[in-house]
Image (cartoon, rainbow, N blue to C red; front, side):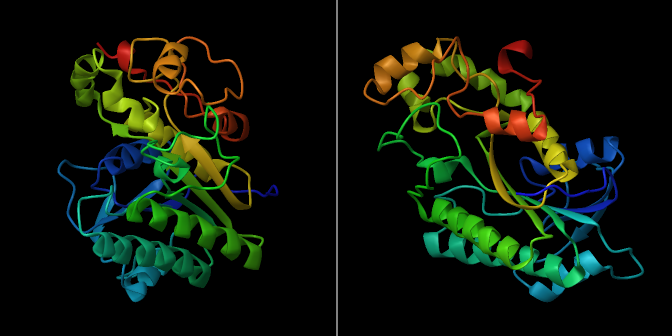
Length: 292
């Protein structure tokens, strides 16, 4: 990945604006000077600091219009693509794939048509091999080993990442950043966390990871504003786990034979955010135990 200049603000299209992560992203970007156009198939549940547009992202023509401007609206300079069927098991597998992958292709394609070079989108922690019924190759897991999709939902995310790899090869000036978000949590979700403490197996499926939506929004902005070109993936998780036990103890109990890539201290995340810290300046601010 090479360096380039990207504006720290401008007009940004945010798809999936009414979803679990979308509202936090819309608010955060608006608070940091971005002019946000919010897009979803359903309107937001609460007022947002953005123009809302209802659109079907599986229709390339609609996506091109969203980026190039319509009804006297201005074109966008950047895109945050969060829209998707958000997890496996919510729809039949074929329906999940047929929605998510074409929609992401249309976003990538429309960006090329519109001349938009700055695109950040939601990949997923699932490409790391979740649920970890087959143990990971090492811990903390990171972006260095090949993707291991285990569901059709995750397979779609892996296909999207491969598309990004080749589209940036075709157009070296294009920036496509995939954020592999962990399990998104809202502040009200932290009431559930005490119920997991007596049985660590309830959350072993993603190495006890999570991402506060507000920190997820921070990562989106930092990725948008990063002076980068090309394709890159970043794991985005909080700095701690959902458990009160030390991470090394959890590993000894549930993954005793998995190699440690480096020492694990305290309650630190086992979904490594070292790369996001190093390249984006990402630092989580909203640990769940601090929200009481």
